[in-house]
Length: 438
Image 1 (cartoon, rainbow, N blue to C red):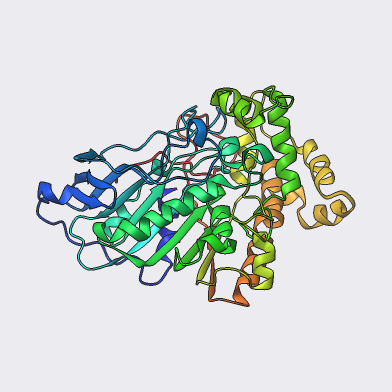
Image 2 (image 1 turned 180 degrees about the vertical axis):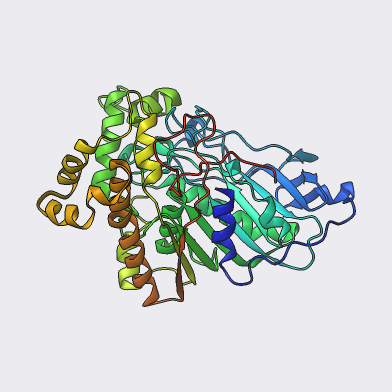
């Protein structure tokens, strides 16, 4: 995944330059930076400086659960910034997850060249994981920073904690998207202290993070917070948001499951429920999205792009050559999972494509592929990712400079610590490399 991220971000002209020669050891003072809220001490190395676990918003706990992010309380002295903040609450599920019931999680990380001079371009990375899983620090930013960019990543509220749509707690507010906007405002206010240029900010995201980028393109509240955007594995033309009705139906199920639907004060009841119980009620395999038709997101990303009513910045749209391999092969990891049998291929196609199944089977015959799983992954990649990504780029190109790329790296490792899959794990939508410090 690290290689994919480097290739993807390096495609934006001028963002990353050649890596500088190894410099002499950086003085200890270089590891202390003054932010608007107080001093932070990170780690200074020969090539990069790293600052982790910097709060960008107040902990969304207690009465602040399911409210818009609030300002940080300034601190005195020097705050330790040598380790990431805790993962946001997320269930046991996909291998990329960090199971947690923690809600004090609104922290970000900054990695900058060791000797930053002038104003360097800034990359704000929004992690993937279906907006259900993951952390900002699961991607290694050091190569990008050593190449001449200031890289920022953040944790943001996920799943039910970030996307509950209930009138008692603010209706359909997209708290996860609002968290990211708070992080972008932090960048605008503070990034110059780390050597970054607040006037040159590229937001980039993959999978769920890519759909978040779609949301920022469409959200009036994100206007002016970034100057370029990269969308990876997240065609804004489809699946970029939920309607209020869809979000409320999902949330009502949780409210009922935790026993708050009949309470006089639903909000107070919900805020008393332990996060672990809320995660269990929401389930491990959901797909939350920002809610359209709200002040945060008046239009769905697809409608915003179609009509030109979005934040018009240059955009780079990316898709993986074998996008669905990770999903199809990932089913083998599920309890009772196994490689797809040949006789299961046609029924699966007919179930998904209905009266167009015969046409699909002619275009993607099983005989063309080494296995049923590969055949299914190929046709789903084209139908769910390749065509919608092309459509997304077409919408954008009517209004703003737009480029596309396809990531086709063949040497892609599988999930660390899991049995080898039945087919080669070529590029998938999941970050399947463990984080590395190199």
